[in-house]
Image (cartoon, rainbow, N blue to C red; front, top):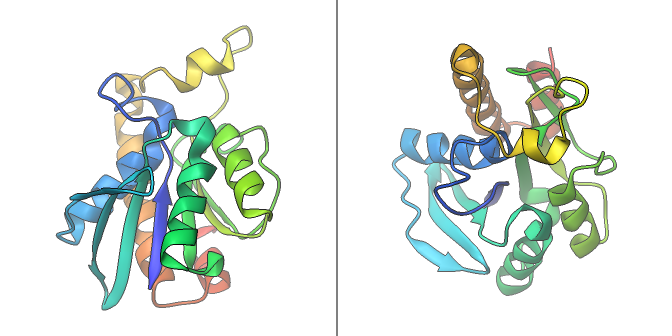
Length: 186
């Protein structure tokens, strides 16, 4: 079984913000594979189903971004799942808008959701798909930037990044994460 954690903030006011691309990618994965988010447990909204013949659980923490690790830890402890079967999908300021970057370890890089997961799991070694949102113009506060919506002109880049993320996650279910990185880090 694989479990995919998409990071974001709950609530309609955050739905279309840059910080919520992890949720957007999971919504697309669910849509592609006929999975419904129909369970509320472990501080998350959860959907379970088969993706490419692999039992997969899609998890959207409802803890707000900065406490994402609480939901990850709750799910791990309740279901006794292995960290190496997890992929975290989230927004990344240091990746160009529209691009994705896969990694299997590393620091939080200033991302509070990842920082929380590292704190609650005790490791920096877990699979991740970073979805690029680029950095704001100088003088634009990071918090305001990540909680803002995408510009209309960036719609195509956003759409293709979500599709690429879903393609990478689906590929990773049948291949090693190293093979997935080799294919999608281009």
